[in-house]
Amino acid sequence: MGSTGVRIAIDAMGGDHAPAEIVAGAIRAREELGVKVLLVGDPQQIEAALPPKTNMAEVEIVPAEDAIAMDEEPLNAVRRKRKASINVAMDLVKQQQADAVFSAGHSGAAMASALLRLGRLPGIDRPAIGTVFPTIKAGKPVLILDVGANVDCRPKFLEQFAVMGSAYSKYVLGTAEPKVGLLNIGEEDTKGNEVALRAHQLLRENTQISFIGNAEGRDVLSGDFDVIVCDGFVGNVLLKFAEAVGGVILQILREELPQGLHGQIGTAILKPNLKRIKQRMDHAEHGGALLLGVDGVCLIGHGSSQAPSVFNAVRMAKEAVDNQVLQRLRSQYEALQRDSD
Image (cartoon, rainbow, N blue to C red; front, side, top):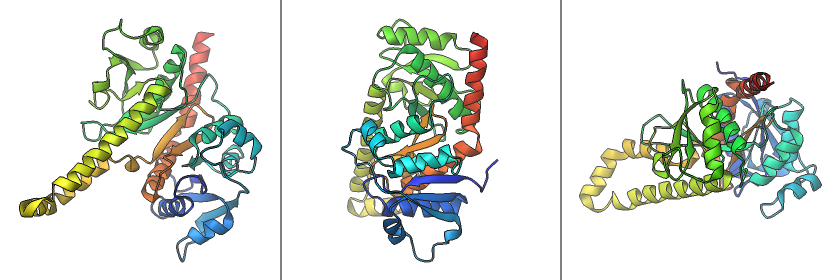
C-alpha cells in the first residue's frame, strides 16, 4: 500500500554530521523510495551539500534562521528560537505541507517542539520514544518503549505505551498479534516495585493488547516478545548498552576473523554472511526512533547519524505514513475512551 507522494520534512541542521550526511541520506531516500524531501535549514549550507545534478523537482529547501545546539535546555530553546530548523520542520507537518518529520538533532528539543506544535493524541498523557531492536530470531524485531522521553512513569503511562507499541508493531512491522511484555526484575507477577505491580495489573486487564507477562533483561533479545514497555530511564540505558554491545561484537569480528592466511580466506568466503550480521546488529540499519503519542509522524535519529541512518529513518517515516499509524492510534484511543464512558 506504498505511496510515492509522501513528503518528509528533514531538519538538515540537526546532528553531528549536519548538513552533509543529512542531505546525502535524504537525497538517497528521494531516489530510492520516491518520497519528496523538504530540507529545512540554512539554504547556503544545504545547497553546498547537495550532490551535483540533483533533481530539484522533488527536493525543496525550506529556509530556517537558526538551529538548536545539543547543550541548550530544550524547552527554553524551542520557545526562544521560533525559527529554528526543528520548529520550522514541525510547522510543515502541522500545516499539512509535510506528512512526517525527521531530526538527528537535540532529541529533547525535537520532543518539545512536537508537543508544542503538534500536540498529543487524544487519550495520551505522555508520548514515548520507541526503537526497534534485533532479536536472535531473524526477521523478528522487538519494539522497546520508552527509551528516553519519560524518566519517571506512572502505571497508566506504561499501559498507553503498550497500546501504541502494539499498533506500530502490527501495522508497520507486520506482526499479526503483537506479544507485549513489561520489563521487570523477574517473570513472576509479584515481582517489581509498586509502579511495576500496578502496571502489570493494568496491562493484564487491557483487552486491546496481548500481554504475556513480565520480561527480564535476558528476554529482551529473545524474540519471545514483540513489544516491551519500560520507563525512559531504564529504556535509555538499555538502548545505549545494546548499541555498545553490538558495536563491540562487530569490531571483534573485524579484528579477529582476518587473522592469518586461513582467516583471510575464510573472511572472503564469509563476506555475504558478515554483511547480513552487520545489517541485523547495526543500529544505523534501523535509522531512528518513532515518537509515539504526538499528533504527527515524528522520527528522532542519533546525533551521530550519517547518510545510511538518515535513509533508513526516512524509510521508517514513509512506512508509518503509508500504514496510517497515526490514524489507527487515534481511532484506537477514541474507542477506548468511548468504552470507559
